[in-house]
Length: 204
Image (cartoon, rainbow, N blue to C red; front, side):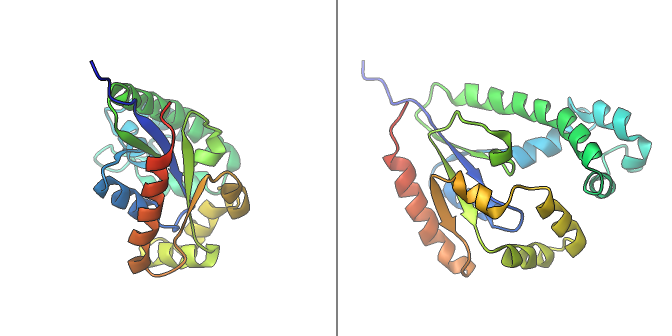
């Protein structure tokens, strides 16, 4: 019996406003299975999620909306102005996110799929169980402009940037860089380059 090659896991990261989500969508169009840590992080703090009660216990009812769902803006206002509060939130949410990612990877383990771990804090996490890491990059001021154009307050974006690793640190961990400093129309060609690189990686 001919066995199919094992799944290939690649990391994808980038700072706020760099265009990581767009790159993720383009990779999905090319056949990748996307495991989106941001989406999972939102799911685990839903009222029936595993991290919900821990967040409420730590931050109180003032971070809840009238329907008992998390008021993400109120929570962000707290944690991005208080380093200890951010550490506490991460200690509650990250293990729950990690458990879901592990489940998703286990579901794909018997396939030959290319699995992309889309993780904003991939460099900070120190995760090393991947065939390679793609970093989506653009100049910080351009990233700021794009994030503000999406409707995020400038002060909020700057605080989030300050809580992420520096551009240089992120690039130093890259095995492949998607340059998103140009117009969005240039991005598909960059993602084609990334896809060719992914397909060239040795399977474990």
